[in-house]
Structure formats: C-alpha cells, structure tokens
Length: 547
Image 1 (cartoon, rainbow, N blue to C red):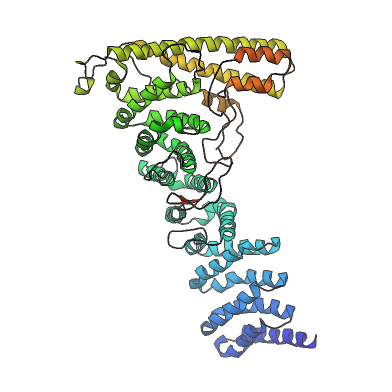
Image 2 (cartoon, one colour):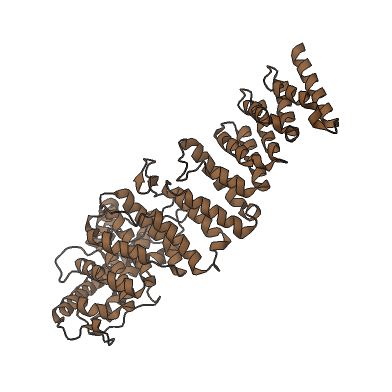
C-alpha cells in the first residue's frame, strides 16, 4: 500500500511540475516517469497515468511511440475503470497533433467490440469527438474496418460493430458532421461505394437509404447524380455477370435491386441496363424461376415499364408478348389462369407498346402506321391477330366469371359475419377486394386491344392492384422492403386452410378454382425480411440468407 501511495504521490508531483513549467520539454524525465507508471501494479496510479500521458503528449514528440504504446496497454487492462479512463484520454492525443487522428480512430474502432456498456459508451464518445475534429480522416479510418477492395476485413465481429456505430451514431448526425456539406457528402459516398464489394441485402439497403438522404442526391439533384445511384444498384445486382437460374442468391439480389431502383427511374435515371438484362437472361427462363419470385419479378417489371426508352421497349416487347401468350389461354381448358401474372404483363405490354407501337404489328397482327419500314404493313399477320384477340376474349370471359365468384363470395361473407368480423375474415375480404381490382384492371387493359389499330395505355390511368392495397394496409416493415399480404395468393389453397364452419365453406366454394399466383406476402425489396448473402463480385462468402 505504501508503494502504491508513493507512486500516486510521485505522479501528482510530475504532473504539477509539468503544468507549471514554461518549457515543458526540459522536464522529459518527469514525462518518462509518467509513462513508466502505466506499468505499475497500482490501479489508481495507472488510472492517473491514463489522464497524464495524453495531457502532456504534444510536448514530447520524441517519446510519442512509447507514450502511445503505454496508453494502449492501459486500454487493454483487466480493470474496467482503467480501460474506461484510458479510452476517454485517446482523443487528447490528437487535440494538438491531428496527424495522429487516423491511428487513434483505428485503435478506437478495434475497441468497439468491448462488451461492457460503459466501456463501449466511452469508445462511442471518443470516436464522435474525433469525427467532430476531422470528419474526413476519421471516416476514412472507420470505413477501413467495414471492407474495401484494398484491405479485406478478417474480423466479422469488428466489422459488424463498426457498421452498427456508423448506422446508429454517424448517419443520424450527418447534418452536423458532414461539413463542408457537398465535399463531405461526396467523400462518404465514395467510402460507401468502396465498401459494397461484400455486403448483405440489409446492409446494402441501409447504405442506399443513407445515400438517398444526402443533399447531393436529393429531389433537386441533376439526373446524372440520380443515375449514379442506379449504377451503384446495378453493380450490386451483378448485371455484368453470367446468369444461372440455379443461383438463387443472384435471382433474389437482382429482383431486390430492381425494386430498389424503381424510385430513381421515376426521377429520370435510365432503366436500360436492368431491362436489357431481364430480356436477355431472365425472361427466357422465367418458368424455371422459383414460384415465389416470379410474381415479384413481374411486378417490378410492370412498375419499371413506364420508364423504358423506346429502343429498349422495342427490344423487350417480343419476350413480353411471348410470355403474355403463355399465360393468356386461347380457350377455356379448365386450368386456372394466373390473374396477377396477366395483370402485370398486360400493364408491361401497354407501356412498352406505347413507346414502340408498330413493333406490335409483327407480334400481335396489328396494323399501326408510323410511316417507318418497321411497320411491315406489306406482310400478312392475320393469324397472329386472330390468335391474340382470341386469347384476349378468353381472358375476359375468365375474368368476368372470377369477378362474379368474388362478388358472390363477399356477399355471402357479409351476410354470415354480421357486425362481428374476425381478423381472418377481414383479411379474406381484403384479399377479395384486391382480387376485384386485379380483375377490373385486366378488363380495362384487354378491351382496347381488340382494335386492329389500338391505342396503348401509356399514362397513369391504371393503378396496379397491389399499389392500391399498400395505401390501405399498414406496411409490415418500416424499412420498406415487405409488402402486406394481398389478394394475389392462390385462393384454391386458402379454401383448404380456412374451411372451418358452414359460413366459411360457402365463401370458399365461391373462391374455388381461382388463382392469383405468387406468394402475396413475399418481399420485393431487400429489407429485413429478405436479403442476400455477402458477396464479392458475385461470389458469396456464406454470410447467410435472411428469411
């Protein structure tokens, strides 16, 4: 105890002499003694050393290496109190010697894996202090622990803690930290782009949500800035990679990325690369895709189609018409028709055909005159027109019959439930309501197509059925990735699950034979419910698939 007291007393003497000295460099032996005290057995002496080492650090540049090493030993001490005191002192090493910021931020980032709350809180406060001092150098050092092409990260736990710190502490303070605004927003954008070589779907969505919030990508941003965001998404979707339908991770990533890009197409960014990749690689193998992903793909394609360029529309139309014919029966065969598929593809067909109308002459037998050689008016496409319009008529008959069943089913449901409606019954009514919207949309889109020279719908008069549903049902995920369950589930499956009691059986019989296709509650975006394994240039590293 006497030795410990002497150590503490000596440290106070060294500290006082250094504080009072006008030329502190003359007291080098006092500072050396303080550094040596960091390795004594006395807890209080080491705590005091943790305060004094950074306080006088700037006056002894020749001892900087030994001073930092001694302080780092204190950061790794067994005693929590010593560690916390040492962590709090780390920013002081940079107060008057900013050239040390990168090194100290690197050290603090490694301490983010601390398990004690008070210790981790000290690390957070120290990092924020350095971010306020030099945001550019601090961010650069922090992002090295996430991942870049040059320095692959080997500690996934450290990487995750760094991501959490950036998400929870840095991103919310962007307006305070990112100054000068445009310069620092560009810097953090570049850091994020370098970190996207190996991310999960949830991580990518987090980064994209942050980038969207920056002023350089705001509503007033020029088209080239918006296009930059689309190019980031295109890179994540691996649109330059060879496609294999058996690569489920790539399929999910592609569909989620297309969904994420939709708002930027609306703002004028080009959808060309996405649409051409779909046309070349995905639509030809559509039937081989997992069932639950087909409807997501078609919905994303439908919502992208209004923003397709005329040349892209002309190139994609043959694949869309071929797929449309596959799901529009020519005659009633007793097989179910997938109403959601048909709604999606009719919507896509209208918007693409509106951009390249005469392309439909050789695809559907129309006679649209534009005065261009591509009109092909001298060729006989009578059989194509007959086939296409017969399919339209069959779709209309099936749709009207379905509407009748849905209306009858809803009427029986209303009579049997009275005033007390269970959550299950509300969901069934919502499903039927969305089903009716789907049917109404189909009829609105088939009717103009019977003309020899139809006018294609290229405006917003058709409100896709699932978008209607989103307005009336609260989203299940604030991150925006999941759709609420909607009526595009196969009703024939519902009748097996819900056939309890006479009243339910009556409604189920009204719904028998109807098929809306897809898994209505599936996620089209990359949110919390669906993501993809971390990947590097298309090669997964087994981080797992979020379900």
